[in-house]
Image 1: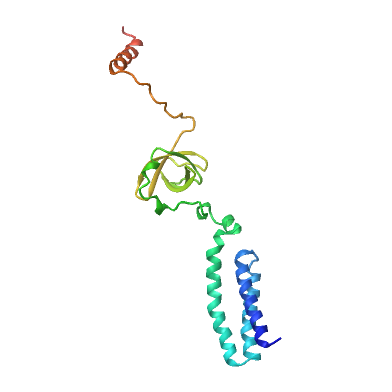
Image 2 (image 1 turned 90 degrees about the horizontal axis):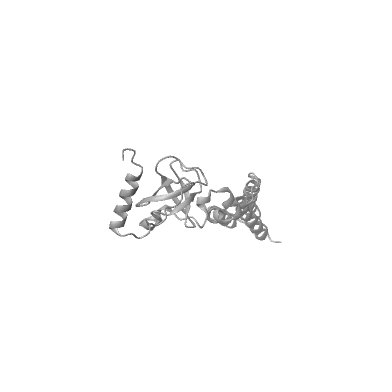
Length: 193
């Protein structure tokens, strides 16, 4: 095998181990081995080949290592381990707070707090996750919340008492019937009558 091939195998192995270090928790062992392989590739190219080949391997290492690390960092949050380690807000179904401009249709809708709202946190409303700010007392994870206002990119919510039932729509009455019924209700329990 030629010296250039051996140096190239060392270089590619080091780059592969750098990427694996991002995805396999090894406590830095894979990163250390990757560094040894990369340095070994450059030194081997300088010793067994000429200065031009060694310099080319050094330049390739200096350019490709940051590129590989950058690609791995961009891909990592979308891997199972990345989703497990990062908060729920980093997952794909998350709705960024900057996308919430003008979402006034959320007012009056109810959802569930997906984190403690102290005063801000994440809530799930209509199947989407939103950055919210609670108005009033704090809410714990799993509490029922209701959107009271949307101001720009701020979604303001309040904690809803879970025993509180949703109001039922009132039946249509004529104005005279409702006044008569209301007066009867008011004077029915009058102790002075």
